Length: 594
Image (cartoon, rainbow, N blue to C red; front, side, top):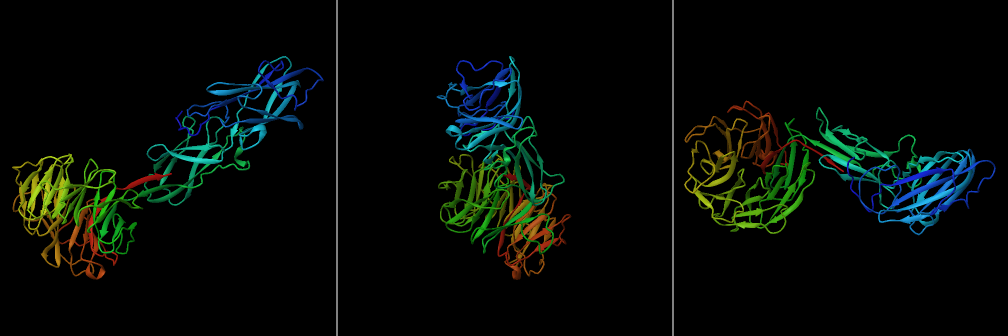
């Protein structure tokens, strides 16, 4: 059986009814003062042995449920429709007929001199003395037979009375569901209810794996196949098996989860930062129409400018401001939390390393680079050794080595973890703006060229290729599925019309672009591209930072094969896109939130 967490004395307990042919015994308490003795005919005795455990956390299954908060019990005996009486007894260490150990209190209670024949009993336990307080467990209509001069063992299965349903995280997209009694003890074992999760509202994004006999509290959620996107609400209800006392109908019983579980399945998204109005927008991919509404629209404040993504799909955003706020946007990207306040000034590029470190290149303020380590709280580490300002570009390689492009010196600096040692610095062809790393290759986008370096970088490294044909203000770059480099030139052909250019492997100095996209787009009169990215299907996405609708700002999608004559398959141009800059493509996301 799956181990289930304990809380305030999770209870795994036993209670047995013993029917014996002789009355009582040493250490037993009598119920006969309330339930009259019978004297006509052969008689026998009923002995109840009840074990009340101490408040401990453990796991296992037991034949019945008795809460560790139990203080007393009532027993009503019937013969047919005839109520023979109700007895109330204490179940504490000091009660008559009870003995105590470190593990439990055991009470043996006897009903003497019952005529041979068939009976039923109803048992309820309470957390107060003398049958007062909250009812904790019960079993109704317990059938037993009294046989003269013969002992018979009849097991009881007391059903716990739930007053709350709790959901605990049990790993990725799985939960443990438990009922609690009135004193907060988990109801576990044969006296526990069974659980069922069912769809409540929304699209069917999950397949539910219901609890099993070997894992009676575990519910798992698997993404639906074929995949359905959206958010589904799921309810959880408790019930009792046939033949067991159903306590869900009792006064005060709670047999459903108070708030729904939500399962969210998101498609890949293009997430872009809109600088002037401070929004991060997310659009489901592939784009569907020029009027497509965003899936995500997070208002983070004016000057929101930068985006970066870690290996777990978390997106980070920062503003081009002093001071700037750094935001973390985890899947499913519905909320953003403040990760920190940037200590430097006007960051121009942001990157997240394989080790989770977050680095920013600061265009001004004298701080060079800023480094945050998970969980990104506290003051950032200022990286100034070998890092000159203003600094425009930053990137991590697969070994978490950190690279900065120094605009003020036309150099490139590498810092190895923990980023406190002697830096490696080499010269670049022109002013470095944006950095991109793919495998063991570093691309340095510059004011008039793209330098291609082989990694690891040393103090004697020189570019293995310099791409300069048509390159001007290469702030962002992206690699397609074939490893070819696409360069976003902010002011390529002229001040009003940038370009997108493709350079093909193996990259050679002076090679001409294989593709140059240079054209007005949609309703725009200019195209000034910034963020650029590919999805897994080879579609190219461009954030056009020209401005709002009147100025041509927009999110553009180019579908393969992409040539110099290509026009966007979809161009979303809206007043909400006021200076659209950085762009990331998020993976499809599936999550379950208890």
